[in-house]
Length: 240
Image (tube, rainbow, N blue to C red; front, side, top):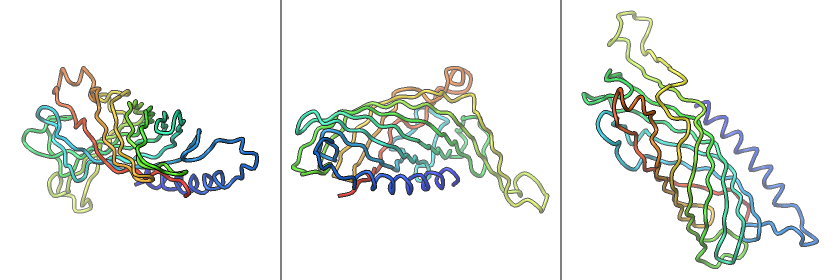
């Protein structure tokens, strides 16, 4: 919740600052800045969900709860009327909610009432954009093909149990334990991405090519991997 509040504040001030930039006059026509001009920068945010199962056994997730949230800025450089290249830089938050069952192995086979991983990362994406519609000075309809890389700087594991299952102390109704700096997650991840854009809205898909767990963890505990495929909805922030 704290991360979402912080990001919401950043979004609010970014939108206000960005609106001031877009309203700056270009009387000399020296700046080629705009959604369908040579250069363009705009903020965006998206919400994604796991779209496939975990690899192997022992890493089952709760699909409805497992999600990601991302906020960042995108630069687009127009090469031709139908072709652009660009890059993003963003903050990325992932939450993997683990299913508690008899086959659970990550990070251990102990079952809890609730359990999840939380990852905070810096993300960058490079892409090639193909436009396929008349759009005036708007983003229009497009397809983005690209690759991304993330650096995970904070990892958490949270699990909770109702007091009746672990203690008879009536002063505790629900006990939450938090572990940080988890040794079994890789810091670097990378993959491929695709976006189908319809002006401000786009549908995206991301596929992680790298392994999320370290080789030592996969050797000692399980070779399972959390879902690699993610789909979601993105919103680009700019003024018409």
